[in-house]
Structure formats: structure tokens, C-alpha cells
Length: 113
Image (cartoon, rainbow, N blue to C red; front, side, top):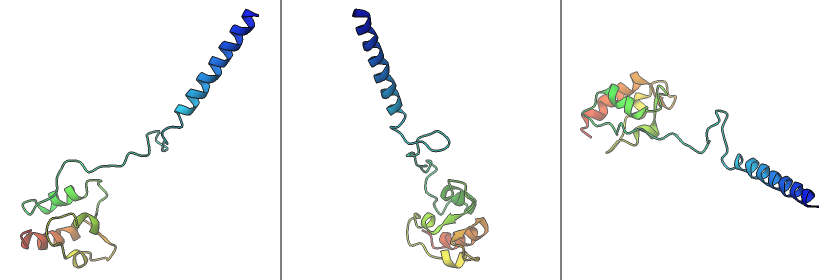
């Protein structure tokens, strides 16, 4: 009887540990890379560009994800009154590539923001 009881206790413990282990993998959803999908990219501490930055440096700070363009949302983070996005966006795709951004930045710099 004692060996039967020990077997039952061991089987129950094994079952409970496998259930606990199985549930632990369900706590954090993972993406295909196996990392928690809840982690969002955050802007590095390069800071916000100022008018003393070159257009290349300003573009790099705003395009911290290295997409190759900046959006209206990106440039709206700049201090002061921001205008000229539509005039700089020559191909009307809603993004400013580096050439378009240089035109935009010249206007932004000249306003002394």
C-alpha cells in the first residue's frame, strides 16, 4: 500500500510540474524571433535635432529606425511651428527621403526654430 501511495504522489507531482511548466510558456506571447512581442522599439538617446544640426544629422536623429525616410509625424516632433513638409515632399508619398528632407531642413533652419 505504501509503494502504491508513493507512486501516486510521484505521479501527481510529475503531472503538476508539467502543467506548471506548460503554462509558463504561455505567459509571454512571442513573435517569430522568439522574443516577447510586447517590446516596442524606443527612440535611442540621440536627442531631437536642433537648427545647429546639419540636415544629415537631423535626418539621422529623426530616422532613428533607419527606414530611409521621415514622416510628417517625425517632423512634427520638432520644436516650434513646423511647415513645409508638403512642399518638400516632391513625389507626394507622405515621406521625406534624404533629398526631400534637405529641402525641408533648409526652410526649417532659416526660420530659426
